[in-house]
Image (tube, rainbow, N blue to C red; front, top):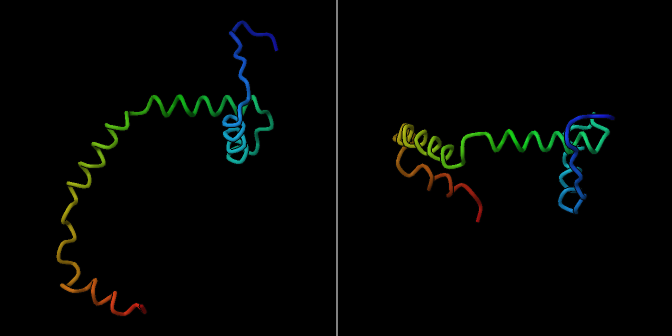
Length: 89
């Protein structure tokens, strides 16, 4: 198909073939390997544009700290040991 945009040539390595197989299962309506590769690239770009791992980790840690101890005292002392005693050895 004619286009003014640059084209990219990619050699299908074993790793890329495995990724394309996963993509084919995720998007069975896509019959073209080129379209699957495009979807993989776009998804990868979206993930790279998301906040960094450190930022996500900081948010998760803050949420855990915010809720830490919220359920303290819900279970009576010795509850876990009593449960374990019910299990066969």
